[in-house]
Structure formats: structure tokens, C-alpha cells
Figure 1 (tube, one colour):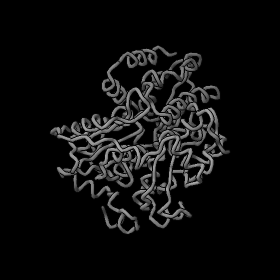
Figure 2 (cartoon, one colour):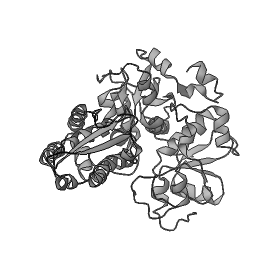
Figure 3 (cartoon, chains in turn green, orange):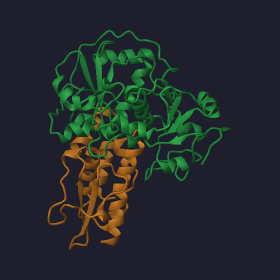
Figure 4 (cartoon, chains in turn brown, yellow):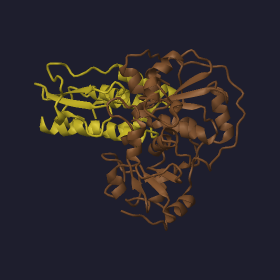
Length: 285
Length: 139
């Protein structure tokens, strides 16, 4: 963490670390730096020295079922990248840490909360002309005892969201305004990914995920600005966030959970690709 | 499709191993050469910018005396490795006639990057091909 991050007033400031902090901990055996990107070519073409790659499709998703890896697979992954339950993992990646936040959220399903995000992500590190390497490190495999995946604390499923919507609990749709209104079935200028209907889950508010970061350097906005963005919600609210497949909403989940300190935030990873295609579910436009 | 482009696509398409394919694409990206100054210089015109491209790619098409066309790119995002790989591939079409260039199918994006390409990446990369074709028609 740095004084700059501390001064922003977050509820859990040590959920974030600065590029300086990472540079100072490159050789720290209790810290594992993890790069998670949308672009598969980025890590192999250069990464922070000592950083390992966790790829969202290859490493975190089940290869058959639309679901995440199970606890045994998670344990094997942790062992492979030399992470023990005590290791502090620091995620960073492209696109304003979009995929890094997604990876951190998946780690939370397995109770690995000793996790942080490098503020500003990969681009900030690159723009600061910091050291990069193509050397892929190997670490002594650890013995990571798998814990059962917890699908209740941070994750929401369709039927739970149906009830959540009916009860008019806080539901935040982090997609673009055009997707929220139903004008588009996908991100602006992005191809259609198959949702049959456009719109949003009844009762949802629209707060696009990227509004939480400063466009100039990808760092997170300070607490006061984030509270203004999510104005009207109290920290005790039961909140569900969603997007298209649950990746953009992981970023918002991180903001609400750690930077603003909302204890009851869940990510509906089925998101619009499930809801917008489901038989019998209502939508609003 | 221009033979040089087709040959590279076929070669990469035939690589089954994910890591080998990634290495081949990075090797391709390393061959990328930015648009020469006599063709275009910064700030590049918005009319040459590829829509939806996170890598901030620009396309420039120049007609040759032979009747063929040269294709050039700029990729402004330092993280635009995939865009540079595709640009390096499309640059191989330089010298080709318009019919050959217009025959480049957007499917080559999936042929070389694979079907696991994210929605955002596939949008930006296919738009690079579309922009080449669109500029070709007006050059």
C-alpha cells in the first residue's frame, strides 16, 4: 500500500497496492504477483519479473460446465504457482484490472482473501517504464489443502436473483447504458453474444463499472467519489451486481466489498447471458 | 486472399498446442512495422482509426503505380500485441490487388487467435480487417 492509496479513504485500503509497493516486493517470498488478462498474448510478451499468469479461460473456468474450477482444481492451481494459504497474492492485468478483479473474485470463492489488486494495472506499470521480462518463473509446488468452494457469500445464482429482484433489494447492472436500456444486446461496438432479449433485470440500477476508475491512469477513484457514484446505498444493504457474464461486475464487486466496505455483495455470474435467454424471467427496458 | 496472408494463416491455424500458437503470434507481432512517416504521422486522423479497437489501431492504404495497394498500421496502445500480430499479417497483403485484399475473410481472426478469443478482442481485431477494406474502397 502507499500513502496515496491510504489518503483516498477506503474502508479496506490494503486491498490495493501501488506499483511502487509491487516493485519493492518482487523478491518477497510471501508475495506472489499474478497477471490476469483478457489478451492472451500479453503475459508471454512481457510481464512483471516473477509474476505468474492465471488465465481466466484456461485456469479458472471449468472446461465443460459453465462454472468455475472445483476446490481440488483450485488447490492444484495454487500448488503449481507456488501459493500457500498464507501467501499474499497481488493481481494485475489489462483493461483497468477488469480480469484481475475477476480472478480475485474467483479466489474469494475458495476463501483466499489474502489477495490484493495493483492499482492502475498493467498499463500503469508499463507507462512508468518499470522492468518487464519474458522469463516465466517456476516456484516450488506448495501443499495447498483445498477448501470447499463457497458459492454463497460472494456469488449469486439465478433463483436467488429472481427473489432478490422481487424483493426490490439493491441490484446493480454494471453494463453500458445502451445494454441496460435494451438498445443493445452487447457492449457498444462489440458483436452480439447471443442474448435473445435486451434490457435489464427488474429493479436494477445502472452504474457502468468503468466509472470507478480514473480514465487517465486506471487507478481507482477515492472513497468519496465512489460513494457518490453508488449514492443512496447503505453499507448494510444486500447487493447483487451483474453484467454480461460476471467479469465486469467482479470489478464492481471489488469496489463495493473492499473499497467501500459493503459486507453483503454478491456477483451474479450467470448475468445477462443467462437472464436474457431464460424462459419465464421478466425483464425491464 | 493474398497468397502470403493465406500461407501464414494456414501455418498458424495448424498449430494445435496453445502455447506454440501464442509464441507464433508473438513472433508475428514482433515483425510489425509502424506506418512510415511519409505515409502518415501523429496525430493520426480519426478517419483512419479502427472502431472498437482497444489497441488504438490506425489503418492507412496507399495505391501503388502497379495498381496494387500498400497497407500500413499504427498501434498506439503499448499493450496492443494482438493488434500488432494481426497488423503484421495484413501487411503481408501489401502489393496485392483490391480483389485479393477484399477477399480476406474476417474468420482469419479466429483461425489464428482461436475460438477462445474474448468478445472485446474479437471485435477490435475483426474491425481492423473491415477498416482495411473500407479504406481500400475509397483510396
